[in-house]
Length: 186
Image (cartoon, rainbow, N blue to C red; front, top):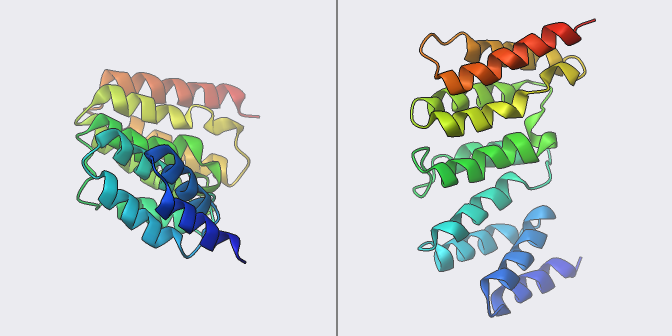
């Protein structure tokens, strides 16, 4: 098709970040081949603007799912030099975007999204319990999921709740989620 080339041209010709981000989003959301060079160029242009870099991370984590590519991309982005769990906005931009704003990428039949969620909640809890509790809310309604998702999600929530030195912020969220799940069970 012709339009990805036109979107890439708009990306290159944009006179401001908003227009450039709009063209980039079109390329990323369509999984266009030109998304990769556009993402690299966008990052190079705005690498010194923390808020824009947060948007860059979130855009990739919110992209429509296609054969596990978003989940794989998020895991790769966690190794990006500009990513750190110690920066709350940066961590939220990537992790919350995946776990709370991209259900197709997060709720995977292999339960990898739930395993990833549990790992990240525990990792963030050691650094920033308030952010971890916000991320923990991604599994508030695990009991409403259909099987096999429900069992896998419950296991992930229970794994987080089982950590002895869990912060009170996260413990409150996961214990409430587990309790509501037992009340909702048939």
